[in-house]
Length: 359
Image (cartoon, rainbow, N blue to C red; front, side):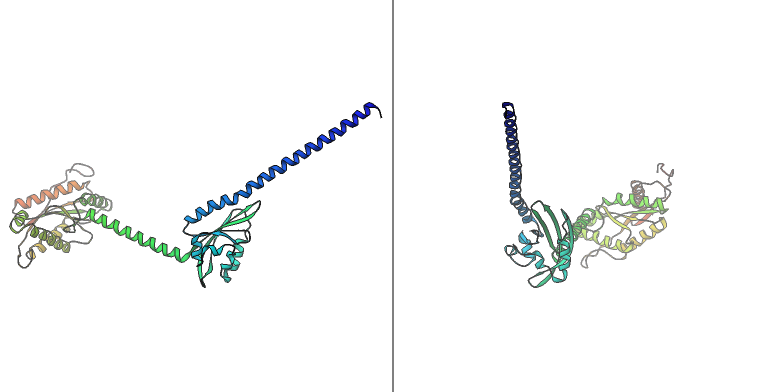
């Protein structure tokens, strides 16, 4: 073999050795990457466990992490309470062993779902301290390279129903308090009549309704004659009693759909929806009749009381505001007082224009 042939064989041998070395290095690198990945994956469960434990500790539902066979890896205290046994005793137990036999098929079908991150919910019964307890189950199954595990949450339906009853009670109480606050904001505490702030709000609504449906709206403005003298002669407590008794008699004379408003001091407004002047006058005369019928006060102190009243009516074809209607009634009330009080007068002025014109 010549020198040239020897050199060629040597080069091929060295090249083969180099290729083997490169291949060995590549295999070693690949194995190193796989080992590193496997090491990282082996750390994941402990990290995940810490996170899941913290989350489950805050949950109001029973919660557990199951392995691929459905055995409990760990669970929260609420799950132990639901199954009526210490949570520590559940570790390693199959959750399916707590499912009532008649629902075993439902549990097998549910946990048999091998889908990745498949979530589902179902209602079944578990056996807790010898009693069947209906629960709602939600399962989230996760497939990982090293196997499957599942997160399970269980809610006691009886507990949920009790919580719903508690929430309904809270809602009813909040609604009652809201209504009480609304009544306090719109009601005069001494007489039980609406407070003065309700006048223009109610009038705006009723006048708009009357224009739309062709109904008249009337307003009575009344005050108690010589009320200051009553206070001066018999004291403010007697005056307050007169105001309350006046409101009681007024309510007897009006409809439940009418509004009695304490406008200020001894001055009251009665708003009569869907009432023309004839109807309003009849109501006014009825109120005056109830006031005149018998004296006010207790048996030891009975005092006759009279009232003066002005009446104004808005026809459905008039663009009348609540303020204008109130001014008309005030003008009529002034006429009654000028004539000697103890009576009523209807506003008899004429609207100068309709549908938006000045009144």
